[in-house]
Amino acid sequence: MPEAHIIGLGHYVPENIVTNDDLSELMDTSDQWIVDRTGIKERRFAALNQGPSDLAIPAVELAIDNAKINKEDIDFIIFATSTPDHYVPGSSCILQDKMNLNGIGALDIRVQCSGFVYGLSIAEQYIKSGQFNNILVIGAEVQSTAMDLTDRGRDTAVIFADGAGAAIISSQKLGGQILSTHLYSEGKYAKELWVESPSSSSRPTIDLAKINEGRHFLQMNGKEVFKHAVKRFPEVIIEGLEHNELSIADLDILIPHQANLRISKFIQKKLNLLDNQIFSNIHKYGNTTAASIPIAFSEALIQGKIYPGNIVALASFGSGFTWGSCIIKWVK
Image 1: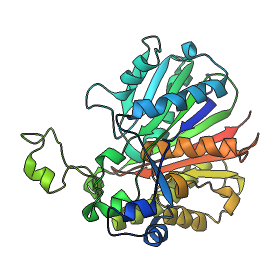
Image 2: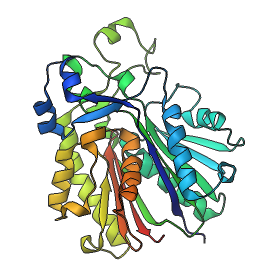
Image 3: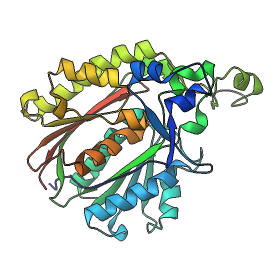
């Protein structure tokens, strides 16, 4: 059976830097208030008329370059996003056209912050089945256009941001071998982190009353999200390691979804990890949902934090609730 390897990574963030002080001009907040609660100092917002497929293109180009393949070698696309360019068609099809990727299969997945880990799991199985040889997995978001940048939306608006990351998953025995993935969901908590409208279960899908009430913006029960995140992250990380007859002592670096620095610090303490065993860049990019793990993974590799023989764990938790982990052995 073929092995699934991550042979190339790339990421891209928009040029527009939005600081905490910038947000304090739009709502009742401050740099200190945001840093104390999230660890975020600044984030990136996409330019006008930029969608997630646009942000994905430079990330994909970098991943292809790092994989040392041609774009014609890609035979399938998996695009994870909770903020698609349009409701129909999916962003994977839009990207396929923009990059002229030979009419290959294209799949959108919507698992929010867990999207990239779920995408890796799907790609791993396709590679192992022998159906495809080089799969492009993308996590990309443009959340800034759908946030309530007023006092009413402060608790979510200070957290979320825009960006894109990409990976090439291949049958080539290079880069990082995906040892296993572990995926979960618990839909009874869907309304703890959700966007109520527009909804196909409503007639019409959205109306002026819902807009005036802000029900088309992301709503989050922060306390409930935190409570479940700090439980599920350690569980699924340990499960992934034990599945591969590994322990926390074998883990070289953990790259968690960049949800909130307080959550990452809790995980670090719970697992007794040193500072160099957990990667964080939320202070400069905020929470980019499906893009956060590939952006962080790409940066960690660029910064020389991953070496041949290292055991790498990716872990996510997000809306749904969904959560998951991916255990990787870096062999390149």
